[in-house]
Length: 341
Ligand code: NAD
Image (tube, rainbow, N blue to C red; front, side, top):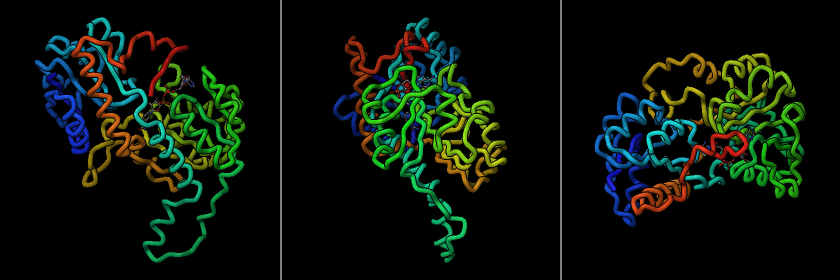
């Protein structure tokens, strides 16, 4: 099948081309993101392959459908960037890769917790400059910390299992509790209780209307002073301006972000010779107790191989007229059944 691959980086080309030897699709790689301005590049392609910051609103989907596209194959798990209702109306099939490596994201989450807890980002720079003093590097034991996990799906489970190994006390919040985690010792509690009792809060729920700015002024007010917040899920789960105010006052003691609500204009590009125009993001980077990574939690060799394999398998199934394993339907838009990543 002819596939227009958007947001292509060298590593996408490498892993997709290698996996495609077993599938034989005609992959045409485009560097730009799919947006209203670039959607005409897909003219005549029955399938497009997209990533987390491609824009699949009703306008772009209409443009794709008019130009002959039938399949939108996401090479990621989350699908918050797709207007699923518009896709359904236009009879566009949408697929994703639901579980390529939840461990990859979970391990990055734990890496952020450990790096912030032991101030590794500061220690690394200090030692390289010949400064071997320890002042300001005092950390805390992760053992016996209370960690609140919001969203205990595939990634949340892996995070819980890893943190259990560190001897953490685990709290969870999820509309669909997982009894296996309860056996592991995680206690499901209402959100206000999770906010009030957690030393560390880690976000692993999808971005849907009811989780937009879940961590806002009101939520932060209920938290312990000095709380650590980790977000490896989706940027808009956090009201960034409210978080900045709380970092300035000390209410939030540390923050680890792999995602940011306005990341589409920043992440995945080398902007090192430019002035960052987003003042909110630039302010976030100034805090000594904040670590930001550019949406890389998924980025391991194993995960990239699995993403390529599963994406191409979805395309092949669609081409054969079968139901792709990663099919997304609008039924998932109902809050009680939402599943994403
Ligand atoms: P999943 O679907 O397996 O789990 C999501 C869980 O969130 C489910 O258990 C669901 O019941 C729960 N949930 C739904 N609504 C909720 C709410 N209002 N409050 C609390 N919990 C709620 O998804 P996953 O594979 O574990 O992925 C989780 C998130 O991680 C995804 O939404 C995705 O955006 C993000 N992700 C990030 C990266 C990265 O590189 N940073 C990579 C993959 C996924």
